[in-house]
Amino acid sequence: MAKLKLPVRTVRFNLKGDYEGWWMDMRTNPPMGPFLDAIVGLNKADKDKVEEILPPMFALLELVLVDWNAVNEEGDPLAKGLEGLKQLPVDMLTILANNIAEQVTLPKVSNGT
Image (cartoon, rainbow, N blue to C red):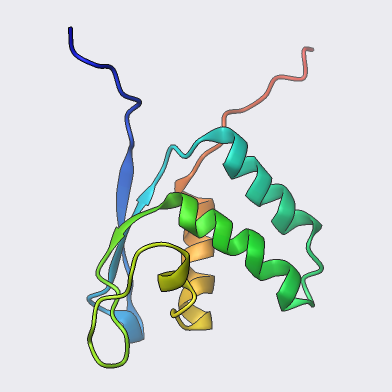
């Protein structure tokens, strides 16, 4: 009998402008618990304090990032995961974080009425 595995659904996000040719494969069905933890962390963070925003943003990006073609200034591939994410420019991180909100859809919750 074949081993069942949860499906991992992804979408390829192609960047534009200065980052034309860069792409990121992002998971559209991340596990609910860690996803909500990151969202709650972002919502609680003081938006004027980068030290409060970055940890939950990195957690969220690390959770949904499946693959990419990101490279550093010398053209060497960046590691996937937290260390690679820390090497990305601030504007690219913002673009990616905003794209997550468009790609990952939470189920609607009925209020029981």
